[in-house]
Amino acid sequence: MEKKSFNSQIINHAMSYGTLMGGFWIAKFMLVPFMFSTPMASLMFLLLTAAVPFVGYALTRYYRNRYCEDERISFLQALSFCMLMYLFASLLVSVVHYIFFRYIDQGALLATYSQMMEAVLQANPALSATMGQYQEAMALISSLSPIELTIQLISNNLFYGILFSLPTALFASLHRKREKPAQP
Image (cartoon, rainbow, N blue to C red; front, side, top):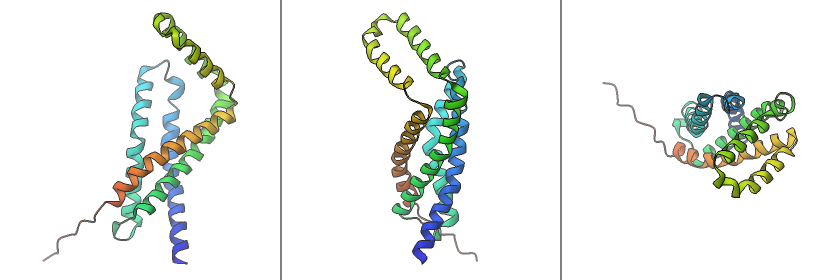
C-alpha cells in the first residue's frame, strides 16, 4: 500500500507541476503569431524555449525539497516525476495548440513563413538548389489538419521532455542534503 500511495503522490504532484510547466509553454506559445513581425518576440520565444530545461529542473528540485523524505530522491523517482510533468504539460498546451490552429490561425502562420522564405530565396539565389526540399516540406506541413499538427507538437514535446528528463533526474538525484550545524 505504501508503494501505491507514493506512486500516486508522484503522479498528483507531476500533474500540479506539469500544469505550471504547461502554463509556461502556453505563455511562450502566445509569442508565436508575433515572431515574424516583431524581432523582440522571436528573441523572447528563443530565450523562453532555452529556459525550459532549467524551469523543469527548478520544478523538480522544488518537488524534491518539499515532498521527498530528507530532501532525497532516487534517479528513477526523479525521472518518472520529470517525464510525467512533461507529459501533463504537453497535454495542457496541446489544447491551446489545437484551438489556435483550428479556430484562430486558419493557415496564416504558414503563409507568412512561406512568404518570408520566398523573400529569402529571392535575395539569395544560391539557396535555390534547396527550393525543391523546401517546397516539399511546405506542402507536407500545409496538408496537415489542425489535429494532426497538434499531435505532431505533442510528440515533439514528449520527445524533448524525455531528453530533458534524463539530465534533470540525474542532477536532482545527486543532491546531498546539507547538514545543519548543531545549535549550542
